[in-house]
Image (cartoon, rainbow, N blue to C red):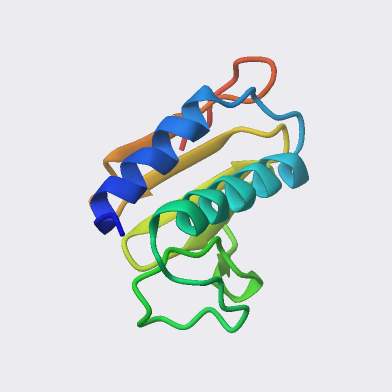
Length: 116
């Protein structure tokens, strides 16, 4: 079993190594599949579809974590415990911590990043 910080670092490494995406759906799937793969391999905790908040496993965003962004119909924001994850319609992903420090800037297939 690996520490949460080590697993998160591995998730970020794999996300950066993956090809860019061309749509929101593809980007969301990439994030979910990558995070679940890392957690399946390294957390020692089985996936629980109820997404418990106390099992020390990271889970991809759920629909109830969606928060609209006024004036930005091209973006979708999902709130998690320590981060906000933004997805563009074009497939870019931006993860920022609660102090707005960029944790992951994953450009879309055309090398466009999200600008807030």
